[in-house]
Amino acid sequence: MFMKDWREKLNAFLQFNGQKILLHAEKYLKPWQIN
Image 1 (cartoon, rainbow, N blue to C red):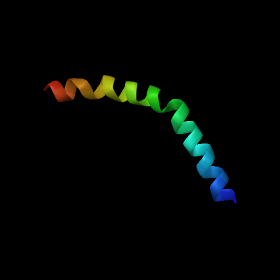
Image 2: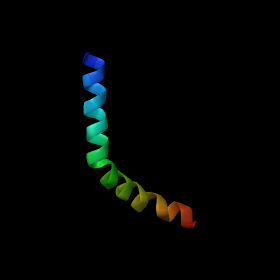
Image 3: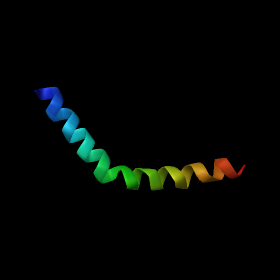
Image 4: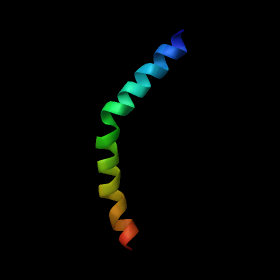
């Protein structure tokens, strides 16, 4: 029960913040990919 609730909260967090995290990751990864 606890694990299911924890996983649902984690999934909701990732869906909410995933796009922002990806944008930040791209900003840091792009210079490395160019080189």
